[in-house]
Image (tube, rainbow, N blue to C red; front, top):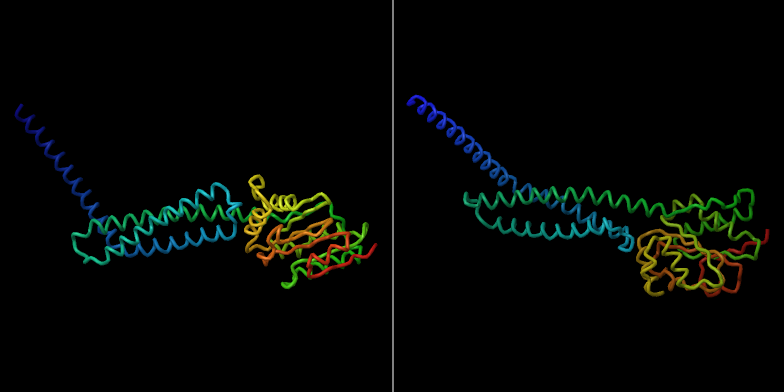
Length: 311
């Protein structure tokens, strides 16, 4: 009996010793980890700032390249997360600057270790947001670049020298930074619509502009309807429109910094392009107007007017 008790006591003591050993290892590991974080504090702060700057720049790029009117819900939520983490990074930087003012004493190991760990964790969160943001931007820009739609039914004009020359003249004018509004006029049967369709499909136009919009107006077409057509092709929310002035502002904001060509066919009356799209504020945007009426051009202030002769 005594031997059994002695054996049990020995086993218990051995188990206790093992646990003490394990606890000691854990304490040493924990202490070592904290010391490592203290040593890496300056490095973690620097890397956090570097990754954060990349994230802020990506957010700005998304908001610049893609107006708020076309950013999808997923990207909106991403922007909220970026704004939130920006505040958290600012708080960590403030704490770091405050810690630098204190002597590096042993008593400061714990707060320095915690701060360094928080910075490392925040950097990992930023890296995830960077990855998500790059993906979202790629999707949105792909949609934007896909805004040049060809017209399958466009008649070929290579065998028609007169129409082909008009198209090439317009393309040349559009390549001139000083020419932003081009007018094309001719009587019924002169091939104006064919010219416009071939401009829409022209390879040089696709290289010149990110967005090409085709709009056909009519006698009954109002400014609101014309704006609605443009906004629809820009994939803006048409249902939330409230008037001509706001529509023009939204179109103008969407086109800022982008190269856009708007082809307006069958113009029957004077069109104020500033009221339609705020063209004076979008120096990268250009417009080609086509009409069978000659008396509208005086007020249109076109930079070039081409008269298409009868075939």
